[in-house]
Each structure stands twice: as C-alpha cells, then as structure tokens.
Length: 355
Image (tube, rainbow, N blue to C red):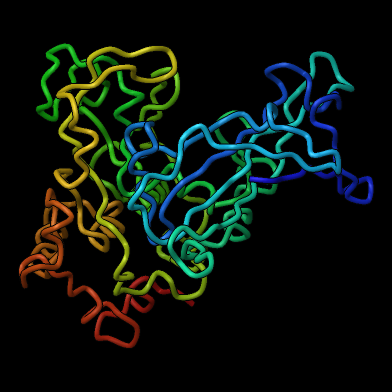
C-alpha cells in the first residue's frame, strides 16, 4: 500500500515520518497499518492473529518514495480463496514533543477499501454514525480508545470487533486447560466473551437493562467490567447511535452470527495477550464456532432475560448454533422483521419510541 501523513495546519504538507519529532518519539509515536477482509462481514481468516484479528504492522518502517508518500507491504498475504473486498486502515498517534514528557496526540483513524475479487472496492456497510457517537464521547477525546490509538472512526472498530472475535486471547490462563466454557481464573468464570460490535456496543450501553455483568478482558489481561455503565441519553432511542433506520430488522443477508464459543481455551497467557491455545486448530475451525444469530445478537445484548430469550427463539433466533445452520430451517430462520420491522405491528421504532 502507498500512503502519506499530512499536516492540516500546514496546508496539508506531508510529514517526514522518518525525521519529524512527532513520529520519532519512541513509544509515544505510533503509526500502524491494519489489513482485514472481507467487507461483507470481517472474519480475517488466515491473518495468523487469532481469534479473527487483522494483520497489523508498523507503518513507521515504510519505505519513502521521495514525494512525501511511503510504501509498505503486508507481512501476510491475503489468503488464496478470499473473495469480495478488503480494508486497509491507519491508526496510531503522533507525539507532542513540545511538552516533557512527550504525550500521544489522538488523531482520527482512516480506512480505505480495496478489491480482492470484486470489480471495484465495496465498502463495509454503515450501521452507526461516528458523529452520533461524538455527541456523547466528544471528538478526539472520549472516542479515542486503546491508548489513543483508535480514534473517531467506527469503521475501524469493526475490523477487530467482528463476528468471529472473542476476548479469548486476553484472558488469564485456564487452570484446567479444558475447552469447557469455564475459566475459574477469570473474574466472571467464563472462557471467553463475544466482542462482535453489534453485541459489544449494545451490551455496554445497555448495562442497566441486562440481567448479568458484561465483563471483557483487554490487553495485559485487564478486566473491563461494564456493569456500572449508564447511558446518558435515552437508551431506547436507537437513532441516537444508528445511521438512518439501520436499527430496523431484518438485518442484512451477509451479516454473520456472533461467536460466543470458539471451542478453544487459554493454556498460557502473557502481559499482552495469550500465547497458546488448546485444542490445536480449534481457532482455525471457524465453521465449528457456536454463535448467536445476527438479529438475536443485537437484541439479546440488552434484552437477555429468560422471557425475551425464549421469545427470540420462538421466532427463529438462535443461540449456540454454527453459522452453517443459521437460516436453514424454519426453527433457525429469524422472522423478527415480520413483527418488528418498519411499519409492522410492533415496529422497533415505535416500541422504542424513536422520534
């Protein structure tokens, strides 16, 4: 890929990332390239970073082209057989060296789409509007996450927070070493938690509605307990986050179910994530992952009480089912849109009081 980093305060003149202090301040300067595929719904199969993470490499080592641009080659090729389109993202932060010690400066991350087998690049669908998120989180402030590296771009978030991903790689080592859904070393006793964006964000913002704690492990085996989060707006108003009417079922046909169990567990862990999993090959076998069907995932992230779960399943939503089985029988075909779709008897917009 070919890229440049420009300075909007200096007529968009390109930075020299090899010599400019903003990009040479050691660990305070960071510029990373992420590659993911396919944009129909990211799975990142074959990236070599499990479970389901993108290829990521240091953009500061890229080769200068002599015209203010730089060229970089991914250390991992897009696997043969991959179809559709992919995404290249640049994230990280320059350093403000005018202060001592230097501090990381949050800068909006960017994405660019490329064709793999598509005639031309097909972007990933837009579901939430970043500007809506900024109404609460602010710009270059609260919506700057993971050490100020990922900032103000929800299309970057979904690259890692995808349907195949869980927090397994960040969890402490499982004392029994058996992939049985239980890890007694974890504060919630679970082997892993789903981090797919459509479940993850609803579960965080809907903590006051949920019947259990939503705990996710992060870098350094850090524990992130979201159970005390309270949404500052009108929680039922889907339009406060969503773009247009993207909250209305039915969900898109290409949207994958949310992984809840990869059938792997943690054998050893390091300060920055797991280094070993068992059984061997389990993470690569995404076809065996247990999932929540797509619409059920988004709704049950907030509404996870037994009565609602039963209602979801009575109408084709599924829990702990493989992707290949979703939608193949009447019992596994989501019919949520029949009642909850736009203009239906229990339209989500009406039931939630969306203006």
